[in-house]
Length: 332
Ligand code: HSE
Image 1 (spheres, helix red, strand yellow):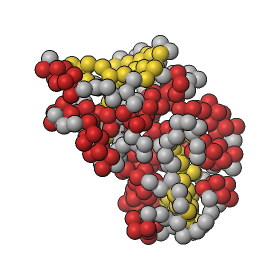
Image 2 (cartoon, rainbow, N blue to C red):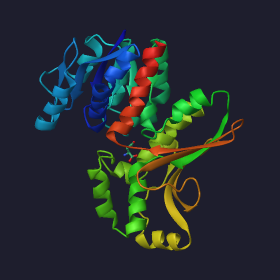
Image 3 (tube, rainbow, N blue to C red):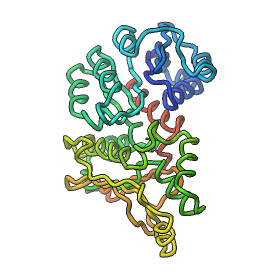
């Protein structure tokens, strides 16, 4: 049995989703020779550390009842640097100003010889090359499938299944919240504020929902794609971004009458990175509704491949994190 020890840094929707999925899946992983043990969890108010393995059921209940997992005082950095483990799951919220605290957490993990699996877009949208180099210099792995497209395996698909292809262009919808808002406004004629509130209640909006509606979240994801797939050295500031805040119910209705929908589309190719609302014909593959994400990838050998799936949500994002954990378990 290969034992993999993890810390979960950030215990919001994503961190808790990871804990829940480990609880429900570890027996199955055990049957496949892998045992996942969580030795540290931290949230904004404190932490829990147990070298023998935290009781995840207990930690989840404490979080639900008290709003924090804390029963100890170790900081995130103390856990990352001083508790012996293999993989740091970095799931703190995205911060697009300076990438913190995620950036320092990830660098500390690499510098103390630990692999990183993350859902946190901010550090990757600001300092992708620095992070990749820090991982390489320390001989550890850096996996970030959960940063883009929630459960949709964009990086795995392109780097593994489509290996050998050159990707020419990628376009898609990479933000579930705005897709949900535009879909509900079109189909139910509901107003913007009400639908945004619904998206927040579904747990898919960012901690600061202006990141969603102003296109910042989509832009971060596009930058990660540009860096990972097109090997560009882009940052969030290289994206031409327009959000959905100026889309009126009248515009949506007019589009609808003419058999179009308005979608917040991300486009990467030929060195340009654009996030903007676009008119999409209702029968077009990019016209997916609700919280769905879609990525349409144009390659030189395989032609066009389009994948659709759940782009946000606690368990859906945990699905991508688990796949990265298992990749590391098998390849390290
Ligand atoms: N707020 C994001 C979205 C979460 O709505 O897509 C997933 O990155």
